[in-house]
Image 1: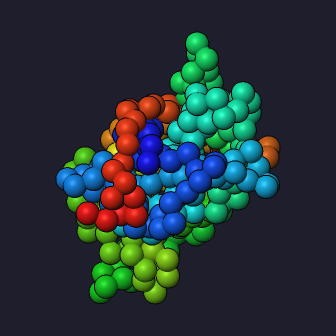
Image 2: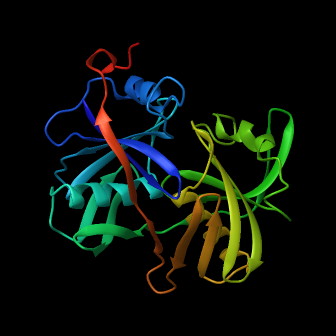
Length: 271
């Protein structure tokens, strides 16, 4: 099985071209390839399929095998994969996800994609609320990006113990499917710093939907403007929440790390 390892700001996934054929047990395969000691090592598995509704379909699985609705860093790499591999010559693409169809603008140099702008759709912020989970209280602002997020402003992301928010990421009364947790430190109206604890993966170096949720939450409270540089552990994303159409746009890099063959005996996630 041929695979490609790709990353967007260090948010790394194993990618499969499933436009002709696909493994039968993708959750098991995701768990096997994601293992950083006995597998390839990644935050999960992303597969590119044909689509009847868009140019391509993206299916993403977290490191624990659970399927996610959407991944902002991952979808940028999908755009790079299909263009660089000659599966399309379009620089404007539509990708079907469980969070809806997303439109990508590919930025190319020497016939290779270097960065991608993604129309991430219309975010849905809620009012800040206090949530009780496993006997602890958390007060943050939920935001839906097609997948669930909750954003917590803090004085310093560097000094914050993000793991104390980890119980929210698993199914709980407030979030039956779990939630992605972001903490954010506002530096200026146009610049924030954040960290993220992702459902099914733990803390990752970056999260595209999380960065969008952070800007939506901060702008909604007047803490920032609507065009913000978001600094994550893996680097910077540019996020713009358009006041006219209500859509939020994310621009960031997409990088191919390496590619190889997954042994036949491990095709279904075996040892």
